[in-house]
Amino acid sequence: MGNFFYIEGAYLILAAIILLVTLFVTTRPFMGKNAKKTGLTSVALFLALAIGAHYWVTTTRMKEVKEAFEKGEPIICESRMVRKGAQSLILKKSSGWRLEGDNFVSDAYVRPFFAARCIPYKNR
Image (tube, rainbow, N blue to C red; front, side, top):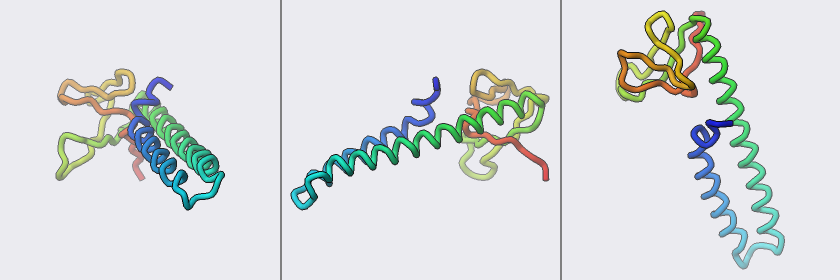
């Protein structure tokens, strides 16, 4: 739960904006008497479920990535340094990568790779 605001921060801000828009729309004179209560409740419930589901999926994937990395399996991570060409990088423990918290770190790269932006690489 420690990374919740880090992982879901942007979605929480968007949810607040959506709730403000819902509040504005439901308080207009053409809306019914219970529109504000019903609208805010239903939209807030939907947003809470969507954000909770996204957090669960993300943390589950992060756990799988960390376990695969510890077993020595390759991991594919999104590279934000290079926006053109090769936008992903394959990390391996045997290549000098290490896991520090939720970040993959190497002496050969300036930036760390956050585990939420990685997936286990499976040869098929």
